[in-house]
Image 1 (cartoon, rainbow, N blue to C red):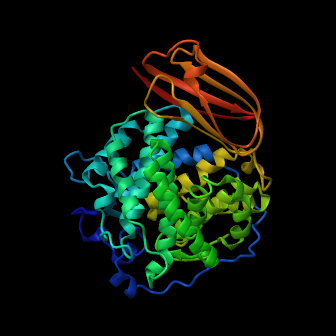
Image 2 (image 1 turned 180 degrees about the horizontal axis):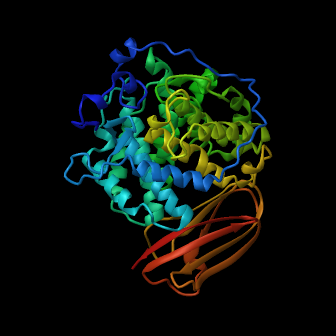
Image 3 (image 1 turned 45 degrees about the vertical axis):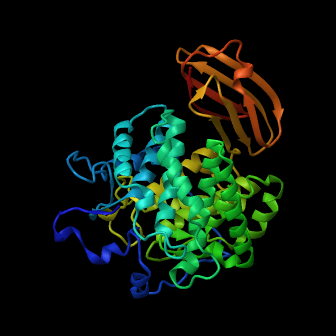
Length: 467
C-alpha cells in the first residue's frame, strides 16, 4: 500500500507523480495527456557499443536502491522502497518486491549476502502491505495493479526461497498465486487504458504463475497459468500490434516473455516458430514517453526472450542496444536510472533501476558473449533444485539452450564432494536429475551447494536438506 510520509509539500510535486508507478484509476487516466506511440519495427541498432561489466552494474543498482529504502524502524513504512530521489514520500509494494529480487540475485551472483538486512526489512514491509491488498480493487478490467504486484511478489518469493532456502514467506507466495488464479484480467472488451495495458499485465502474470506452480509442484497453479496463457496467445496472434503497445509502466514485450515462459514451456517443440513469427512486432527502441526507460526495460526483456529461443544476432543486437541505452542514463554514475532521458541526474527512481537489473544486467550475465558485440553469446544455462527445502537431496532441474557436455556436482559446506556425475553430451531442452539417487549415502540435514557445468557455462545454487 502506498504510504505518503509527512515530509513536507516540497517533496510532493504533482507533475513528477505522473512519472511513477502508483495505481492510475480510469478517471485519472482520462485526464492524462495522450502519449504518441513511438516504435520502429525496422530500427537498426547503432554499432556503438559501451564497455561495462554487467555484474558491476547489477551491484551498482543494488547499492543505489539501498539508499531508497526506509530504514526508520518506528515508521509504518519500514523496509519499503521509496519511488525515487525526488519522490521520497511515495513508497510502493511492487518496488519493494523488485528490490528483494535484486538483492537476493546479487547474493546468488556473488556468493556474498551483502544485502541480507535490506531483504529482511523489505519482507517486513511486504507483510504489512501485501501485494493482493494494493490499490485499484479486483475488477477484471481495472484491477491491474494488484495483479502486477502479486506477479512481482511471486518473482521475489521464488528467488528468495531458492537463494536463501528460507520458507518463511511461502504462505505469502501461495496467497499471491491464489490471487492470480482467481483474478485474470479481461482482454477482449476493455477500452481506454485497459485496452492496451491488460495484455501486458497478463503476460507478466502467467509467466510468474507458471514458474511458481512448477517450483511448488502445484498443478492448479500451472493449469490456471496455461489456460490464461492460451487465451493471451490467441489474443496476441489476432492483434500482433500488441507486442509494441506501451501503457502505464508496461510494454507489450511482456506478452512475449509471459507466453514463452508459460504456454511454450509446456510445448517447447513449437516455441521457435511462434517466436520467429511474432518477435518482429516488438519495440526495438523507445524514442520518448512518460515511461520511456520502463518501456525500454520491458522491450529489452522481450528481445532477450527472442534471443534465448532463436539464438539470433538480430534480437541479440536489439537487446544489447536497449541495455546500453539504459546504462547511459546513469549520468552521475550512482547506479540509479531515471524514468525518461530528459530527467536530471538527481531524479533517479528505484523501480526503473530494478528494471535495469532484472531485465538487462542479469540477462547480460547469462549471455556473457553479448558484452563482446552483436554476435550471439554463450547460450544461457538455467538450473534449479526442487523441492526446496527438501527431505534428503532434491531433484536438480536444468535447461540447456544448446547441446553440451554436462557434469552435475553437489558439495557440502566443507567442499567435500557428495555427488559428481558426468552426463555426457546432453541435448538442448529441459532435464532432471534425482540427486538422492546419485549420492553414495543419505545426506544429513544441512546446507549443500550444487553446480551444473555445461560447456563453458556453470549454474550453481544452494540446497537446504531437512531431516
